[in-house]
Image (tube, rainbow over all chains, first blue to last red; front, side, top):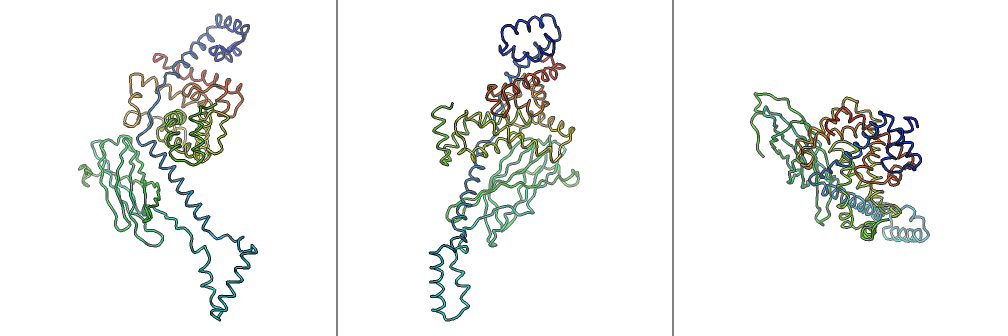
Length: 253
Length: 193
């Protein structure tokens, strides 16, 4: 047996998956060849060690984060289905019953008013004016955070947030949970409106890896109790350390 | 192939029952997160891969016919999510080799400082596990997936062949090659083993 052939059989041999005759030939080769013997012993070690790697735990709120995304998906598909069901279907216009109905309506409208400029009112009957409202919630584009590292290995993080107004220019109050991912994960909760900007000071005690991600999980409940959820990343601007700027004085939340 | 309780749970998921999905994923989320971590080599990616994979499962569960184990189907989705992300990253060419290595080092450093992972990782054998994890991370994508699925997730060769859509012979020969590569990677650290 050649070394190349023996090397191809290493895992099968440990698995006990080599036919008896071939196994004898393999063992004879291993007895004579120090390199292949070394490989066999090394592969056995790899095998044993890989099985001993401990499982790691899931991060905090792992399950909740998954379910939040699932809920968002459910909600989006429900809104889409709702919009579809309330949207106007052009094909229905050309069905015989619809054409007969439309002709009837036209006769009544023309006959009742005696004028032709009733087209606008006629359009008012059409279902596309009755679409379900899709609430797009988000933070205002100017929402951001500034991080100032201090000399003690910590940092001050100031988060500015303001809810964007709804498409109909109405103010909105959003509930947020802010997930600060860095050397430690911090979760903050509260509410933010489109009326005024909020400033949220947070002192971070250990920022040795200097990598931060801010995720805002937003939710909005309309008067009928329907909830809309949205996840948004808040950009983090790093401010260089300046001893005169007061960076060394931590701001406590 | 799958037990009755799980089959009933999956049937309820197919009807869109949120609570059934909640229960179903609770039983798998740790294994999914571990698989994603061993494949990606860092906690943030493991988190994103896991969430994306569960979203795909939620969208596609109606297509699960129950011919294979649910776990095999699930691991196939996790592996595909990981491979898709790798492809996207390679296409964008955002990461140079140096940056990738640096990311790996950061992820090891974060292991010490981030309180969210288990303290078990920080035990006496941490150095050995770090060396092993680095050796796994250095393998090509498919070999890495095979090593993790076989040795960490305990899948059979047949199941791995199904997850990766490869013939069993290919799985066996690539696994053998991957173990030999790992042996070479661990050689400079043999005092640990």
